[in-house]
Length: 195
Image (cartoon, rainbow, N blue to C red; front, top):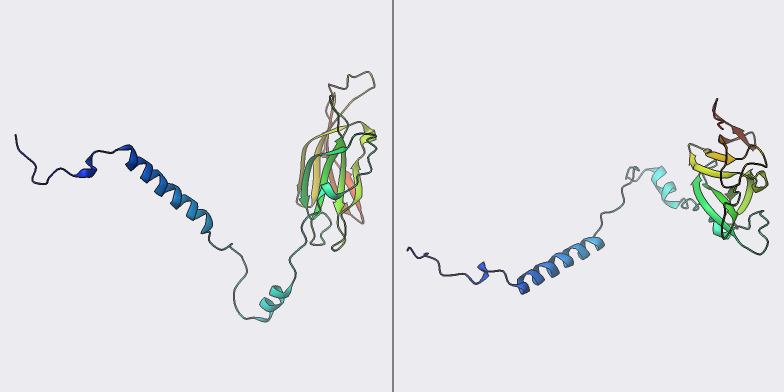
């Protein structure tokens, strides 16, 4: 039998303390990397041009209005209103985002009807509802809701008659709203209604 030229090394057998030390070192590296993030990327050019000083002095755009700070035109009696879904986008082209919220009254069971409301904020003032796109009195529910390219889209689920059980909507309408001439105009793609 041939003996190795190098004596037995102490680290050739891994003990639990070695694994613990390795795990602690790895956790320290991961934690440190969370604090060392690169600067945010921007598409603006750097330089000392006249426009760069004006851009630096311009205030940051206001955040989209928070639907939690709004009183919705919804009569819920003793229960509160619930924001089911929300989305933001600049709907009127003024450079400030609006929030569109799907809201209904809180219910212990069943499916209460939804309303779709547009919320805006004038300057730094309190957010307020400026438009009702779907009124809860229309007894519809909202699915597939989005704000894209300055438009609000939704699928509205409803009932063809009072005899249809409220658990099972039998109508499906696609709707789209866009800001035109000072109001939200509703349109729907051709053949969007279904039963």
